[in-house]
Length: 211
Image 1 (cartoon, one colour):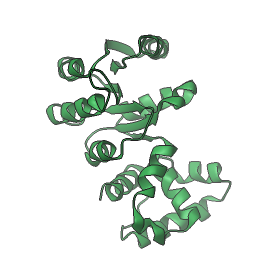
Image 2: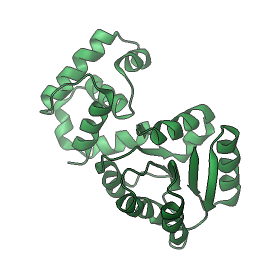
Image 3: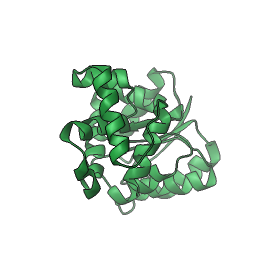
């Protein structure tokens, strides 16, 4: 599986490269700045791009903007974004494109190797990998979610991370029947038809998050 990596910190860039290669990914190019990222993505058309949000020269949102631009050139390009912070505006723009896998992880998640590798693979396969804190901050910016109970918000957050009913039940220590009931309530309250299709469920959640 071919990867283009964008990270300005040399030690982290080298560490991520070694980590990915240890799990049989091929890092075809690793760049350290925003202007170099878009050409690298267009040139290699990787199976997945792992991109830091804030890259030189301005350390604002070059990485995320390059990823969004790349997806206009290469529809469906899987992108996993890494960041120290949540960038709501551009996160919503990235997630609003339903073609191809997308993910948004905070950098401290990289310390859990298994979760990070799983997220890269999930996004490369067309899935979604959302950091719980990212989900929480995006949800907090939507007042209409006040109609949901605290437990329904929790279930919605787990859904947005791509978890199945069984996985949500295990995580929250409840039955699958209870999870199913919460999900039906969520879709009813948000005006969305319930579905057993996990990918469709995630897209529905992301659609709502993006207005």
